[in-house]
Image 1: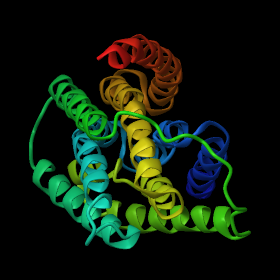
Image 2: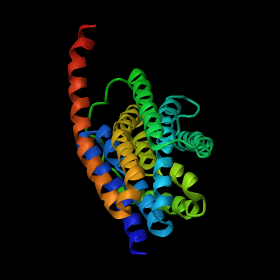
Image 3: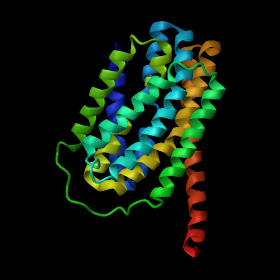
Amino acid sequence: MSIRILKLLLAPALVVASSLAGRRWGPTVAGTLVTLPIVAGPILLITGLEHGPEFAARAAGASLLGLVSLALFTVVFAALSRMPRTGHWAVTLVLAWAVCLVADLALAPLSVPPVGALCLSLAATACGTWALTRTAPADPPIRPSAPLPWWDLPARAAATAALVTALTTAAAQLGPDLTGVLAPFPIGTSVVATFALAQGGTAAAAATLRGILRGLWGFAAFCFLAAVLIEPLGTGPAFAVALAGTLTLQPALGRLQTALAARRAPDDARA
């Protein structure tokens, strides 16, 4: 029971922390932080504790396919947010969720080994990054704005907690494959992206979504390490190694991507 309570507290706390970071350092940082496996990680951990290492390992492998749907969600959300008729945040969110859910249901029956699923998730992330960079290559400037209402952060936390509760309640009865595919379903990412769109417009939403895609590389590493290590090491040690690997890889990739972007900037200016 304490693990379930911790899960419900951690996910809203991460969303709030990433939102505060976004106000300070921009929406891309907010998107990157919210893709740490603070929602999918506890879901997979609980399945391991409740159903055993084999169930958890299979679910973790399937979650790599869920990252394919998550990358698709970012591209669809960004595209819909720019359309005049569907650009309202509620319409954009519902339609992007629908596309993501259909993709999850299509991917769940597939039997793909962890290495193959990792390659698929990384390829989807790369394609999503290319698509969003091509349509909106620059982050919006961080500029002063009117004070946000007092209920802004509590609303984000409450929305995240409600979505986590709904997904985990349903996922417990779905078996390892569908549970794993649904584990990365955009919960905290939806909250952060939707608030960015509602409060900052399409440019802020696009920057947040690019940050989410940047974070998926570390997310994929977490799922892969968990999938291959749970059975030989046990649930607890495997998740500790997977989390350490993610926390090590994510900052390194962020620095590399920042450096590459800085090198491309003079070339773009000359062009």
